[in-house]
Length: 356
Image (cartoon, rainbow, N blue to C red; front, side, top):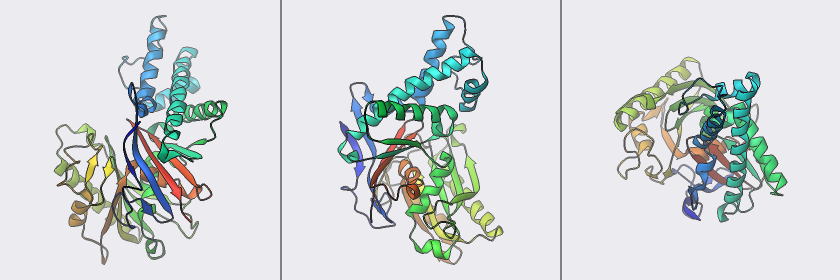
C-alpha cells in the first residue's frame, strides 16, 4: 500500500518552483513513495542499514564456528572499503561473509523492485538506476548485478543499473536539470548543494554543454564537504550559517578560476518538498527542525547571498533522490519511463517520464 508520496498530480509547477513536477524535458511522476507490508516500510529491506545487518548475521554464524575474520565488534560499522578488500583479497571466511551479505541483500533488492513496480506511479517503468552510497562500492555493484539477474530469472521486464556518477557527484550534477536553459549559453556552471543526514556537500558544477548538449560531460570541478553528524547539539541556524559560508567560498574559488558561475543555486534535500520551499516531512535526520512551515531554506540562502555577479540569485530545491536520478537523465532520452532507487541510510526513490 502506498501511504505517502509526491506525484505529478499533486504539483503541476512551472520551472523554478521548489519540488516541481515539470522540469525541462522531463516530468517527476512521483518521489518519496512509501510502500508498506506487515513488517513496515518495504524500502527498509534494501537500505544500507539492511546490508550491514546481513553482514552482521553472517559474522554471527561464523563466530559460532570460531571463524569470524573481522576484528571489529559485531555492532561496529565496517567501511565499504574494508568489505570490498575482504571480498577481493581476504581469506575464504571473510569473503564468505561479504558474499553471503551480497546474496541476501540482492534478494531483498529484487523483491523491493517488484513491489515498487506494482505501484500505480511506477507502472510502465522499464529502467531503474540504483544510486546512493552503497552503489559506488564493489559490494554494491555486485548486489545490483545479482538483483538484476534475479529479476530476469523471474521474467520481470526491467533493467537495473548502477548510477554512472559517483553518488557524491550525482547528487550535485543532477541540480543542472533544475536550471533554466539560458544558463547553459550564458554561464559555465552553477553552485549545487546536497544535504544529507550525515553530510552537507557543496560543489561548483560545470555543464560542459559545448562538449555534449545532453550534459553527459557535466562534472564537479570544486567541492566542499562538511560532516555535520560529528557535531553534537548542532542547531539548524548554525547548520545554515555553515552552509552559506561553504557556498560563498565556492563562489570565490570559481571567480579565482575564471569560471563564470550562474546566479543559480540548486539544492538537493531529503523529504517532501513543498512549492514554497518548506519541507513537509522526511528531514528528521538533519540538525534541528527543518520540516517546519516557518522554515524555508531557499529563502534563507537567497537572503544571505542575494546576488552572484551582477544578477539576483535564483535558488531551487528538490528532493535528494530526484536530484540523483536527474543526473542519469542524459542516458535516458530514449526511455519513456524510468526510476531511481538510492541506497543510503534508508531507500530513496523517484520516478520520471521523458517529455517530448
